[in-house]
Image 1 (cartoon, rainbow, N blue to C red):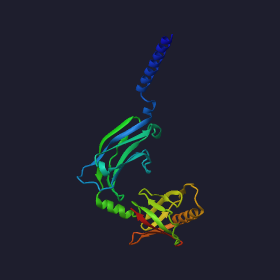
Image 2: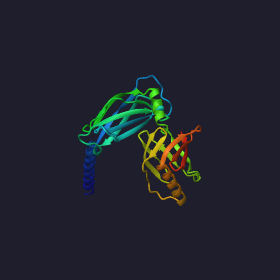
Image 3: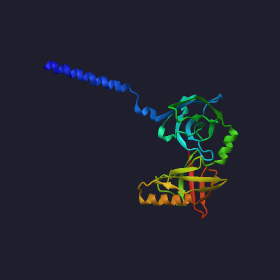
Image 4: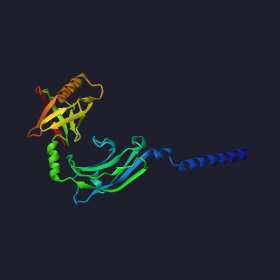
Length: 265
């Protein structure tokens, strides 16, 4: 009797294990819920990359021509050791892609100073109805130094994080941190004292204007709250700026209040 029970248990165990093995061989239901975009980037020139350079690969929504293309997915590649060709792979959930949308891959190599060194200069389509978009080897075009120099002159605030050391001639609280980051696409963000903030900015020569900022809602000590408010008040009322011989950034308002910051490279 006991022997029959043992045989029955072994038989049932075999059936369960066989079922598990069969299930493990079935394709995952989630496998079709994403689109993979992969390939490699390189450039033709025999030029070594400056240490600290990195690549940025983006899939952008280019359905509407007269607007800045929203970024659907992005990947940053550290080129310190790998160099080029550099492989990339982005996995995009299907619900982020419209069935009849128009998408394109953009790749660029950026130096440690924030300058654009190489970039794609043609349209590389990404098809939302394909499980895998293998774009192969993409050859990036070099951005000539004179173009980069003009770009740097037009955007003197980008490429570094500015650390604020004085707000309206009152200094800042010891060990607190206030920062400014100016993106090349017109976005401004950083730490206001306790909370993170973000907004937009516009430059025209030495004239600077900042749009309304949004701030996270982290609870802060009263002193940091007051400093944060003073910083945002001056920042949002900015009218111009200058960078002196010591690389100090001075942002000033129409009423004469200032922010002073130094670059952290």
